[in-house]
Length: 109
Image (cartoon, rainbow, N blue to C red; front, side, top):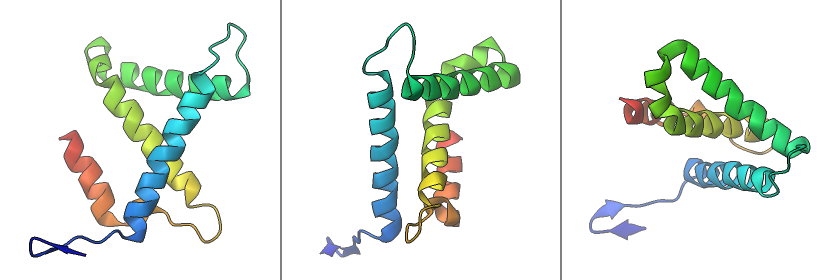
């Protein structure tokens, strides 16, 4: 597809990045939809991921680093889900491309 003299192609990596974002968003939405005092399995997993990233960020950067928690948690979930999707047969791991990891690193800077 050519738009304005540029080649705009929807590649496998773009498709699987969209799938990764959709799966991560759907998981977090479904796991926190009920928000019960006694958590179920999905809510427990999402709370454990939340606490894991929060504790790691607090230990590494202190209280001032917690302002970056949404960014760090989003990156953590993206990389985790992208790598988990790559474990299924005939699926694709987007983090195997150096440009994806370079772009994620450039976004943090």
